[in-house]
Image (cartoon, rainbow, N blue to C red; front, side, top):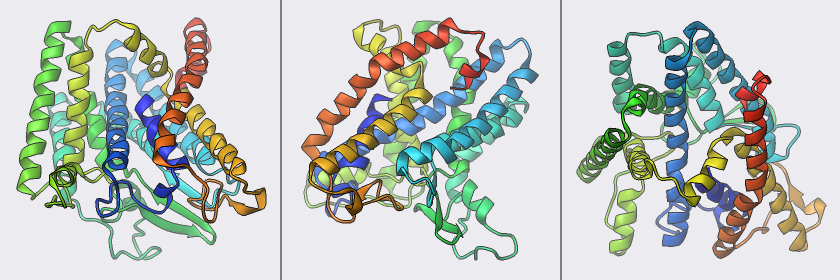
Length: 379
């Protein structure tokens, strides 16, 4: 949750990132590449652990049918939140000229599918998980399919996306929809978290060892497949202008949609962190748990706060309200200019994270002290 805020701070406020990709090795710097690349670990962790949480709730539930219904409802609510509150936080555009289907939406869609798939026998579910996780790169894209033709590809775009880029289409004049997180590739990660939930039932020492082995195995498979430069990612690595940029090219895997290699390296990081953090009770873990106990609340509030900071920065730089734009991808920036250099992103990120700590702590205590308010379970 904390690292995620770094990416959104950069996305909103960084002047250079508006017109360039920080992972474009032909123009980026090593610091800017790292600033973006480290945040790749966030979304896979959210989706994996979302699947784990569903499995744990089903196991602890006295009535699995009721729990499945709750998972279904929460999935629907997350999609509605994505299309309303979250998208407005991104754009501040009340007309919603650009609607982005991102991580909250794909978690919601995953919950809806998982509410049905969780009824499958364990072996069949394990096979389906492996098939989707390791094989989704083989699925055909909808490239070349005409929107509005017989068998409209909109639903397929939501599931798989077009090619290996952000899929943008126009459902109505003046309105765009971007499928940034197609469902099928991310469902593979959620299913992996679901089937791995049984690991959390093991004793602490055994659990830590299992996380370590799985993390190292995932990392090793990533290195082998990436070195071969064959299956697993549409963007092969290449020799750069120096050794550092060759290494960055090796790490520069595809997120939109997540390739197999992207999933392997990011989940390897998650598993290794879980192994290292097992039974670590100190000031750092206690602080981070404050954010982790209220993830959706933190997610929504931090977007609004960073967006408001952007407007403060723009006005402080001398722009007037008439010069800023809330059109697709503008966020409220002026048509040209408006933003901060890389060095300024880090203190603002830390300031946002620190500012939300007392609010998250209050909300976490409020939720735990009001179990009778069942609607709080959805947020």
